[in-house]
Length: 75
Image (cartoon, rainbow, N blue to C red; front, top):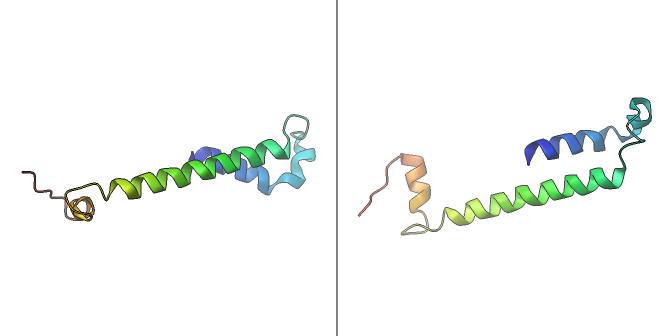
């Protein structure tokens, strides 16, 4: 996900230089925008899922406490 965001972001940032690089024949701004948006939604979904997974322990904060302290009480 991260490389897709980085590469599409750099192509987005330097859109004015595409003609000098010769990239404008092979690439369209719509595809760069599409992949940049898809990557952003994937990172957002990744974040939401991981925040949700921290709340699935015995208590809401048990997994967070285990990450911070390094200890988890298993019964």
